[in-house]
Image (cartoon, rainbow, N blue to C red):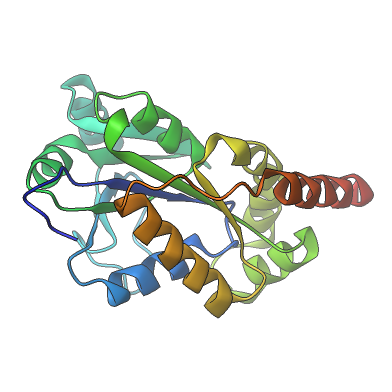
Length: 218
């Protein structure tokens, strides 16, 4: 939502791969046409159907590191051998105009933004899967990665989930439509500067269940 009477929000949406943050991001952008997506730069190769400047800005590693060296990245990280980052200039301009920017990034990027000069403009949301079995099923079902990459994503998901309590809002994506309704309510609350509901006790129990499932897999 663009509002010249306030600074824009940096809305961070994070989750382990397969938990649904990309789908929820698309639904948010459809729900609120004033919301803008922060297009990241990456050194990975484009996937079928992806376009330059729409899904990502595709960079060589040399060009990407040049931007980092010049202070042109708000955040960046290496994930599965590739670099990802958010260009700084368009974010600063949008925030000054009162426009909210959506970030579909991992916990490392979220930490860097929350530690940046724009920290006071951040609202962060973490998406948990209903179970580790379901997380694996979703990764396999989307048919984008090799079995080796899926295994790597599953191994990384445990680290990602361990950062859940660093976020302002934490949602469990056990039903996409229901999760999206809660996500919208969380965003409305954040825009009105209301405190998030105290759901810590139930969320801690859910994360413990997820960690127990990891133990059963080893």
